[in-house]
Every structure is written in structure tokens, then in C-alpha cells.
Image (cartoon, rainbow, N blue to C red; front, side):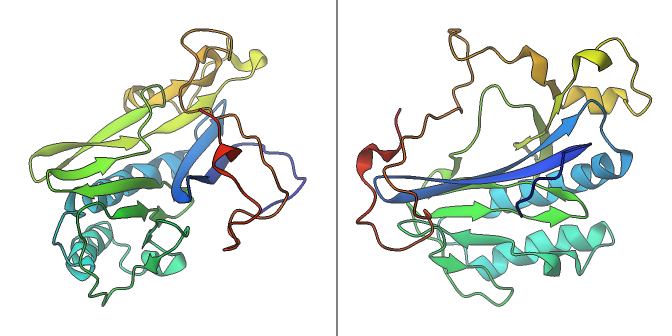
Length: 231
């Protein structure tokens, strides 16, 4: 959704980028100064849901079978119907949505299939694009500087993006009553991000040179060129 309302506490941002005709999407959450307790509680549950989805998205796996494992985590957290609030995943590619996941989906994942998982739980949402390979799922939207947490799935540590916290100057010296050691471990202080001129600037910031004001979700490719997104 879009609007002119001021962001007071937190925001969830979803972005779809396209280069050479191929799409990749990502969803991240940003908090201002403090992390609401209900958001953090929902996000911890969501991390295991998302990690399970990433882990089981493998070559020759049926999407229906992957979904059964993901839905089981929703059920374990007492949220069996939460997934109905929004779409969960889709195969992406030359369109932002080539094939949408449904509970009875018989789509079989093949090598080189890109898949965008974006589950949600309460007010929390997260999303990543992965590539199905013969060696296992390859996470395409992982950043080396974004906050990260890990969940254990079948004995494997699966990385899941955390919450980015941006502190205002007035809040730098204030204590945060909602902080805990667990929260601190997977939050990132946004004031420490280097600016664009610094050699350690965020690699995930892309400069866009849009050659048209048309939506990237329109199917007609004529208004876009390979140079629309720069390195």
C-alpha cells in the first residue's frame, strides 16, 4: 500500500527488481528506535516458517509437499489459517509471477527454477528469492550487511533476515525497555550503515535508471532495456 502517512514505528518493504528480463523479489522489515513486542514475537515464529520453506524448496520436490511442511509450522505455532491472509510463494522468472503456489499444487521444482517465498505471520512479513539447484536451494537475496538470524531445520542452520532497526539521534542515549538479549542478537543498528562513498557501503543498494515511468509489472518489455538497472 502507498500513502503520505508518517511511519511511526515500523514498516515492511517489498521490492521487485528486473534485469535482463528476469525478476527477483525481496521483503524486509524496518523498525524505528524500538521493536514492538508483538512484532518481535510474530517475527520469531515467522523465521522458522520462512526457513522451512527455503530448506525444502529442492530439485524434484513437489510444491504441494513443500507446502505441507511449511503449513505444519504454522500449525505448531497455533496459526493454522494464518497463511490465508496473503499469498505465500510464487515461481518467478520473466514475469514477477510465473506460477502461484496453492495448497494442492502439483508443480514440480526443477533445477534453475527461481522461487519467491514471502510468508507472513500477524504484522510480520519476510521474503526472499531462491534458485533451485542440484546441490540445494541457493538464496539469491541474501545480504552480507543486513541483520540475520538462523533457524534449525532438519539439523541445518538456515539463515533468515532479521529486523533492521534505525535509531534516531534523540534515541541514541535512551534505553529501550523492550530490548532483550535475543532481540539484540538479530537486530542491526541502521546508523552504522556506511554511506555510498564509503568502500564498505551496502552492496544491496542498487542505483536505478528507469527509462520509462511504466510499471515493472506490465508484461510489455518494449519500454525497458537491459541498462535499466545498473551494477
